[in-house]
Image (cartoon, rainbow, N blue to C red; front, side, top):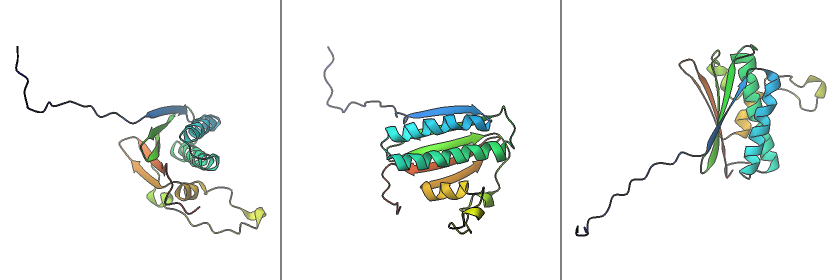
Length: 163
């Protein structure tokens, strides 16, 4: 019989991947609502309040819509993917497409110059990037080898929010 050793035993542990899901839609605007439904339900389940879940949903829907309209130039039948990863302190949303790159200057947080009281002259577009920068805690974009990745991150405990 083998004598017990006083040496500490090495226990092998494997890193556990955080919970994640990947949704893929065909690049048709009428499919975007599916992404919105999924995002809202995920956010609600992770205890973001109803208003915050709606704001995050709007940002992701805007990002996917931009991917279809601008990166894929409105062509249908191309894949747009959403990867959602639930981290301890945040939720990470990655929108991936295989279309044209977004010029970096288009992703800077724009300044909106309009009179919100003049409802007849409100801008009809161009507010998606602004909303993403206002709502999300981090917005990054990486054009890659055939794949563009827009990453939007929201903290699960919004301690740095003013609104």
